[in-house]
Length: 421
Image 1 (cartoon, rainbow, N blue to C red):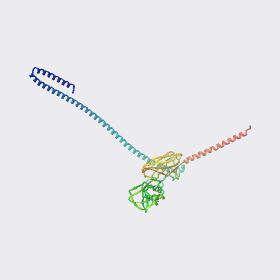
Image 2: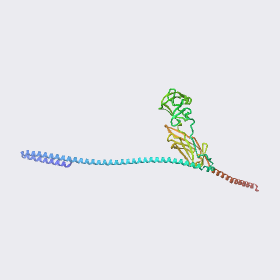
Image 3: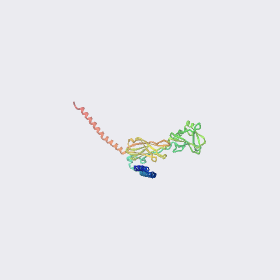
Image 4: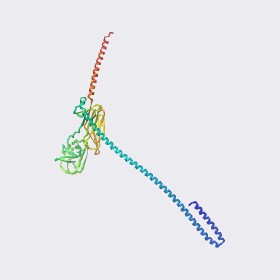
């Protein structure tokens, strides 16, 4: 309640007290009039009390309305502040969304650029091969004109390639093979039985499965050593038993197979270290002149040559390692091949070159090595002739000079001996 309302109430009470005292005096003077005065006083007191209560009620309402107005003002301000903050958050969110969209667009542009770069690289490699072919053709056409200078036989080619050798024995020459894998050194073990290829399942004496023969299988097929073996299900034909103890004694698969076919849906898969195909090494001269010899390539000093390592398509990816006299180099395989370029051939490049193909398959590391190719160095016949001529000229000039020097020295010694003392 405010201070003004308290003062009004206090004044009303004081007036009521004064009226009471006045009424008391009148009552003492006139008893009849005292009753009338009492009634008047009660009415006045009641009226004053009602007026005071009304004033109090009005003050309370006014103060309550003021509080409500203040609360409404504060709520409106708080609402405006919340709306402002929400607008700020929406603006920040829109900015973040825009930046995310820009980042996604940049990523898409980078992916597109990466694809373009990859295509350009492949196109460049293709152009390089075409250019190499054209250079070889040009050198071949100019061979007749340079035959006397370089001493190259007309039938020789400028490219030397070690072709991939055929396997030492056919996968089924001994009646044993690995079928259904990535190569002849991977697959389910089979044996030719009565003119038909039949699966073999190794069993020990307790009639339990045993993967012990896996090493013998790989040796018999000339596939290196066994990497792992497993039993696979899903076959609909019968199989023969393979005695593990017999294989351990004889180191032979064919002679240890049973004769009775067993109804089973299982097969014995073996993966050998010779899983990968043998890579091919090709060495060609891009700038300069070369000459092919038996399992070697003769390259003139200062020439530029290219070593290509390739393998038959089998697995994607992998890498090629080139073992060379100047050090080992490793490059990833692109379309199952890669190139190693050597500039300005020198004495350090002389020696054997070998390609090794590396691949990660079945959570195991496999490698396959190509046949080696020897690089020999030579000089041009013109350079050799120049060297011979220079040596002959030096001999022609130096021999008379040495002869004259020795003769003059001999004469000087003779004079000293004949001079009298």
